[in-house]
Length: 478
Picture (cartoon, rainbow, N blue to C red):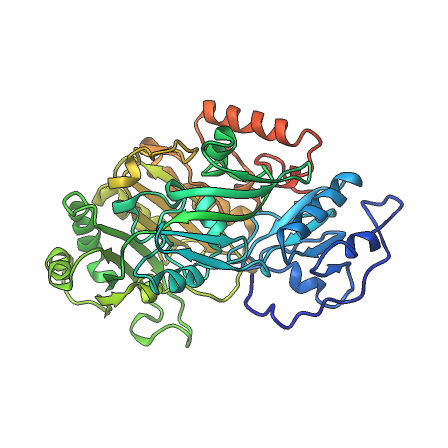
């Protein structure tokens, strides 16, 4: 969600709302059971509660509950179940994958507490906390979470989707380090889920996608990291062929303490873009190395040897500044995207992707290639539903969609991902963006896991309270 939530007013307690064209449903009793606001369309703050980082759509619920505590979430789910309404969750950070039409929306941004247990090397992270909050709290104890490339992302959603971050090749997926999950299921029961208490649900919640309930917080393990050598090397189009060949060869030899990615984008000719890159097709290699700057310099020397850079930001940095490695935008915007988890890549394939997604593409495309392997390929101590561990890379393509033809965007992405179709193991839960692709379960999990996940969703939620969040259930009107 956007960062401008602190000034929201609770607003008047609503009396009733008309749901899905039916008779009015009294919501006053719900307002009396929650510490946070209960809002209807037209109330002050309603539109803000329905807004998120993804601006390609807006939720249009009948009721919004601005949850201030787990009991608010329980009250919202119980109300929805009693009245036959669907439930959606507007999470902090990059938010929901598809719009909720009607029903009850639970906004979790008020639930943003973080508690560190330095002796246990763990953090308790509430549903609305962002990664920077967790990073800063852990750093005070010489520890770090397995956070992602953007410090603005909600920590809980990122982690439960799998979580490929800056330390991943050394420590694995963020989901591998989850110790406990608190979730409100469709029966309005708050469950504390661990590997011992409910192994099936614990397996599913870590990497299995949405539709099991509303998570109110997670306990995650931390690692003893305080500094990294990181940043990026940005090259112009005239060096791009050499960069692509060099990156493909370089990733075959680097240690798992080094996690990196390659991004290609045709930068717009706008004043907001730094002058050296404005209006140019560029490639950036982003690096996070767990080690000293001297060894980091030695490891990246083959990339610097490609030639002059438009930008070189590699440096030793405290982990609290790790958001500078990728320097991703914090401003909410409209976007769509998809990904492929692939077994390998070479310079020829990357050049084909470059040509399809470059300045001549019908829509602007941001292509990201993330180097996987290392600990990401190894099974965690407690099995989870994170799929496609043998993948060596993930290839993602994302486009802004303000004013763009959705069909043209889908077609452009399809052409890019078709280049690696023969090497594709599946898709990533964390990198399926936009209502259409996020609601499509194809390729997200192996068939056996998908059946197991669907069976568990049906058992936990036979009435379909969380049907909005189930993969394969498209939102009305989309």
